[in-house]
Image (cartoon, rainbow, N blue to C red):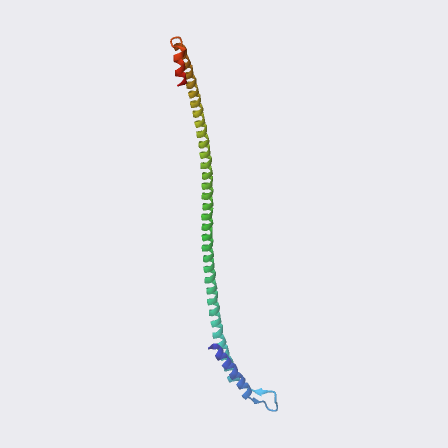
Length: 167
């Protein structure tokens, strides 16, 4: 509305100048009603003052909007950074947990391999001991058997002994 008023006042000023009469004996100089021109100028000043006030208010509102937007952007950026940090921490925790799990799994595999190796060694030793024991037992049985035959030879005839050997 203020702009329309200013343009109306300028148009009014132009009309006043155009409608004014020429000075005596001059075709380039006109006589203008000072009071009317000054009133129009005052009206223009008033309209400009209103427009300037409106512009100042608009600029202040713009500055407030920009400040609010910057604050909101800063808050969003802080929140995004916090979330990114939290995600990075979660990722780091996940990586650490995964590394620990991998290390634990590898340690368990090594322990199982060591236990299996020791169990196999122990079983081999037990089997060797058993084999040795049974070999000694068999040798002892053979020795006792041969002793038994030697003791019983003088009383048993060779004929009687031969059928027993075949069986």
